[in-house]
Image 1 (tube, rainbow, N blue to C red):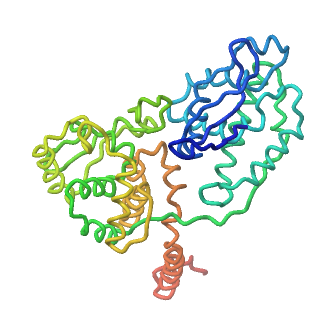
Image 2 (cartoon, rainbow, N blue to C red):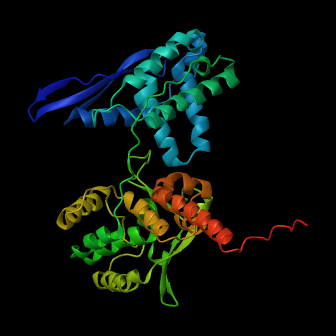
Image 3 (cartoon, rainbow, N blue to C red):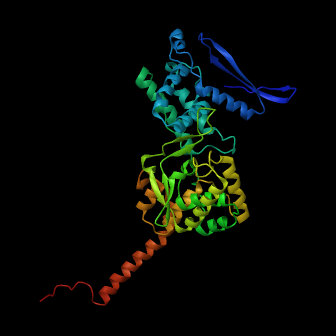
Length: 396
């Protein structure tokens, strides 16, 4: 486990981070990264170092044992080839924060069922330091699955039993959180208070297209075109800031799934707004690499700050940027747009995924279902009373 000692310098208080690694001779030594203004940045420096650190392979041979760190280093190499950069980034984050601190330098063949059971118990008892609340069951399951997949790889490759699969997964009862959205009238209020053509077009594009924020940020000028009076977004890439290279603040990669490659027609509400924005871009001589941003994409903190600013000005509850996508889907559902059309527009991998995600939007139809049955019964009874039912065979 890393430690974060603080010390006083001429410039003020700084934080260091200390942890154990193996040097080129296979000896365990202390590593120290120094001089960070706060503990959070010191911890980030540790995470950045561990993302690229690979223990010497010969350590395993010298010690005559299958050590967790060695096996993980080999596993990372195999997964890095298979996963998208953002997915590999998430994998490293889970190992660094939830798994490696418990299993660092452990001999894998000697670990018992109880060791994994204790790890699991501690994991389910953890709280998110940012919110002070327990981690969601879904996220805990993802962490457990990440370790289990690694252990299965160890079992398949080195015949080390995966004891975790013998342990029952805990289940914490949680109140299902209601999806946060803005109704159309709420977004129109939000839209009306925006006095900047850039931000107005930015947020309108998210709400009226339903695209993911990474897809919008990745748009170039060539991906936006006008045809027969309708503007279209061509979605064929995604921007992520989950990058392993500290010199690259973002990367452009293929969309989330194959079905995410799509063309989205925009409503007429967007036509004049986009014409105005394109004229604004030309006037300001903004680059064409990014439709929003010019030569570089919009910063995450910037579009988040303005989003909350205009929400406050409109007197609206705060929602996440991603919730504009949910708001778009909810609006289409309540306008009775076929689910097949909605699924394709959102770029989902299947209609089932769309139905599962937005099933709650149909909850208000429960009364309509009962009314429909009552009407059907009434119609049948009316048919009998009025003599319009099928004639009974005569009895002679």
